[in-house]
Length: 229
Image 1: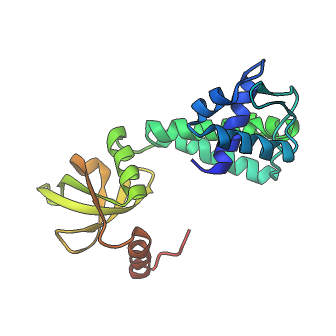
Image 2 (image 1 turned 90 degrees about the vertical axis):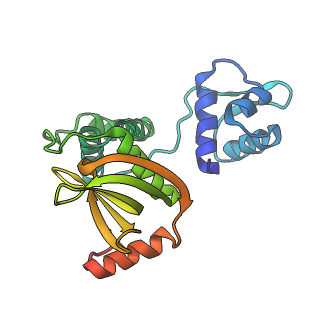
């Protein structure tokens, strides 16, 4: 967990309690040392958080304190809403929930007028044409991409023949009717693209790529003349 995230979580915990919370309880909820809690409390106080209390007594966040407002233009608000709604209609369950949580966090720290624009946006996302999604596969693919782990899969190729592959997943492309894995294929010793709806079995190999994903993805972009996003 990053320090920024920890400070945010500390504020959220304090906000949930009406009475003073002991340093030990805060340390337990955050999974950090008591000394770290005291240091984080001091940091928040120096940034304007009205936190009262002291070591051995407990800490309390006075009502009314809010995080500094996040300022977005109207177009930026619409982009955030549209993107989150797109994910909520087309991604796997974990990403759907993550999109909803992210939007809720943003909404919580926006000024009232911008919060209203976010919550009442008139931008809608239509029904998806994508084939049936295997949520567990997509979550596993995203995990492998982040951690640079190899995947082993059974795959139905264009000739309707089932093949066994070990791939290094580099990216997951979200298209209107399908999902495409960009990967290095150990069988072909080259970059290949795989449709997720053609995967019949998938498992994680906790073996890292032989090259960094960033390097491989750059090579793939150069070969296919795809600009950075």
